[in-house]
Length: 287
View 1 (cartoon, rainbow, N blue to C red):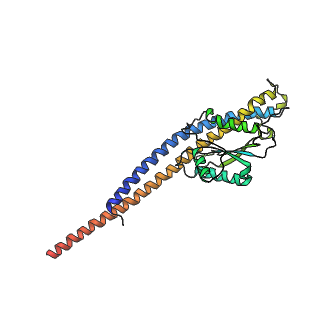
View 2: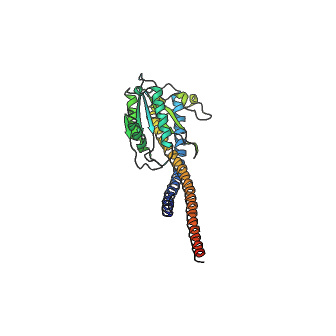
View 3: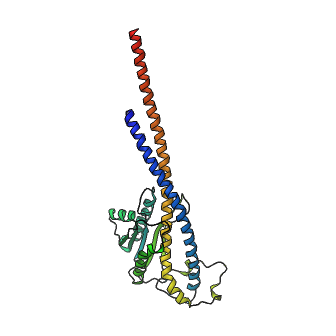
């Protein structure tokens, strides 16, 4: 059985852990609010651009990002975090990634990983990673420039015919306790996959410039926006997962402190009882 000194040392250690996890939880809660506001505004912006593209794509237009280019290879963009302490957040993303690779064949999928956790896992698992981006110190508001390099490389690969499709694997933020991992195809972009604005008939609108010019300018930007929105979804989901994980850690630490305190009191009470029994025994012997 542990001594009283060891129990006291463990209580001090758990107290320190509780203070750290409590601080991380509070920081994640603040960042979650900022990241959620950012995601909400960017979702509206992407939805507005999808409305414009949906109208233009229903006209007589054509673009390399709209049609299959004959390549059977796919690009999977995997978005993970750079840091841990967020429960099974990264594990769920990487399990979905491995499932996608097994479903479509490792030889037919190129993997682009954003985030140190994903890079480290796939490297240890000896999965082939075509491109890796470790985005350290990404702010919660994450400007569009942070995704420019991965997005530019992805568009370049599909325009050159190296790949035929672009898919994104990321957690989609639904609520603080729910961030389902999804895999969505971004390219080829199809008109039927984009919602028209409510109450709008694209056939009775005048376009300036011509729809083809609008599509040529907007489609590459739309791919970049989709990747940016997915990264923002990953950031807000990460903060939510970290806040929940640290909340559970604080709760577990408090339970452990209560258990250790009870054990300490029992040991102390037992020692006092033994000392009293020794005193009584000594008095009886002397009397």
